[in-house]
Image (cartoon, rainbow, N blue to C red; front, side):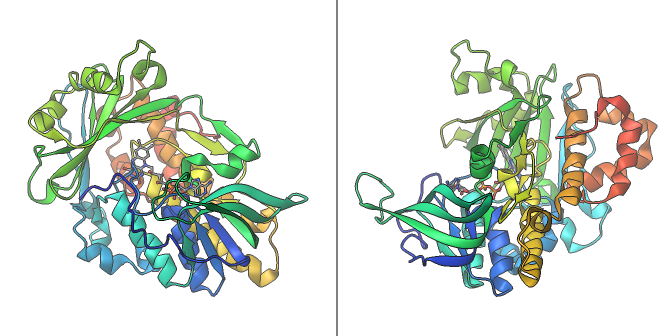
Length: 435
Ligand SMILES: Cc1cc2nc3c(=O)[nH]c(=O)nc-3n(C[C@H](O)[C@H](O)[C@H](O)COP(=O)(O)OP(=O)(O)OC[C@H]3O[C@@H](n4cnc5c(N)ncnc54)[C@H](O)[C@@H]3O)c2cc1C
């Protein structure tokens, strides 16, 4: 079942909140609930404030195998194994000429159960992670819209939050309650809202990746069989001006999205999202073959201009994780992996900070360098993907040994310096990422 609307019986909707916590986490996406669960497990008092009622719809369904260690650390691996989420063993690319390339089967590189991952409906996945954080001791409150961060000097000391009291989620129908809550550390995990980065003017866009996406869900599309059934397929369109993702979900539903540069996708000629999607679909016969007899089951959705990064990961008493710190591009499904990684890194830095009574920017952001280096590995591969005259097929013919490094990145194993040699060989097609 695809959930696109918030539930009217959200489990955390009326949870009472106290006056003061060790840590307040803004946002109950994968970054926030990962960080909260680890902190609560370590005995910290944690409050998670989520604006929406859950379960709530969210784009971003395809996991990478390297999310496995985080799922294990969080204690949700068994739940994942028992879930109905389709199993993902590989990713496959289709060229602009319509040629299906050899799939990257992850177990050919890591013969371990961690090489298999999942395609997740985010409403269910995010709810499971929020419930897990609550079970570990975090207080999770939904319908809680953070409207301000409170500072003493330059140190974050709390939040001002508007709590919805009612069950409908309709502001006008119920009386709201504005409350100030204190904390020693504030974690911003507000996703692309990037609450603090916007508030502090720290958000910088990547001029090379100004993209937009239109996507929807289809039921009854053609699926591959066996091990390939749950594969993510990335299809270039003729002319390489856009590309499609194909992500199989449960209940015979497939997530299909099309991404291209903002100028190309949205030229301002009055076309509707459906017309733009159809325009690009006509340039992708492999996608046409798969979805021509399928039924679209939700309206077309649009995301624009989504590649950015904050100038810093942390300040006195505050830290940014997940998309609230930065987001690159959907092509290599890196978002949840990076949300998990930054959630873990930040939680470990915060726990250490409590041990030393040190909540400085240096302590809370001590993972910045390692994280940004990993993020840059994804980013540079993305530059290669979008480079008009670059072909990964031709590159791997010349440098077959580099296929392993490519697979490392496709699996999410990005936090290691050895990957640099791949980019040295790719040359100027992948400019260094300083964003
Ligand atoms: C088109 C597209 C396709 C993608 N595909 C993939 C994919 O296939 N695989 C993948 O791994 N990633 C994908 N991503 C990225 C992925 O969706 C994100 O990286 C991921 O959701 C980040 O998690 P997060 O916890 O940082 O933020 P989110 O999941 O966005 O969670 C942030 C939460 O904060 C809440 N919030 C916001 N403001 C406030 C406030 N003021 N007060 C309280 N709460 C607030 C929001 O309601 C939200 O629930 C895709 C992204 C896009 C745009």
